[in-house]
Image 1 (cartoon, rainbow, N blue to C red):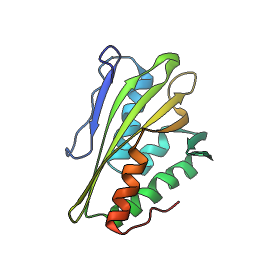
Image 2: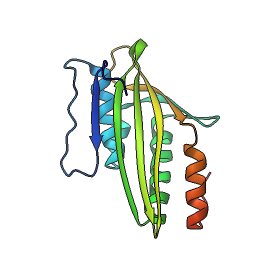
Image 3: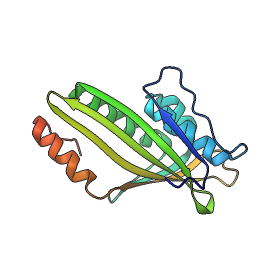
Image 4: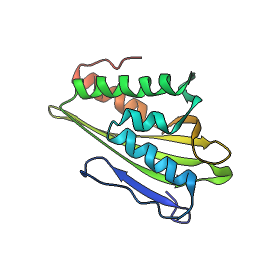
Length: 162
């Protein structure tokens, strides 16, 4: 991530960690930091509170519309991951982007027996005019990451839900 833009880090593994925003007054970065931290600690009500009622989440060719549906999607995948793998750790990096958008790089680390996965993806957030809520989320797969996750799942003998 570029050091020339506002940048914050969240890490769910640190109990009580409240990520700081590096640029005071940047509401979009603050909201994105809260969003990533809420996802990392599985605070579904906190995630829901930051989304507009009609927020759209684009992921791998499909669009989920509505805050409740989006939270359900995140929760369903987290439940599967938590129940399937022995160890799961989430963290993220936040970067302000042009046009008032914020990019989050999520890092999911999972263990299953002798198998380990360090998976990364991006989510580009767009906000309401006052930057108080997230109105659009675009999931971006990084090159090779989805294949790496598929190989990990095969090695563990599990099938990712669609």
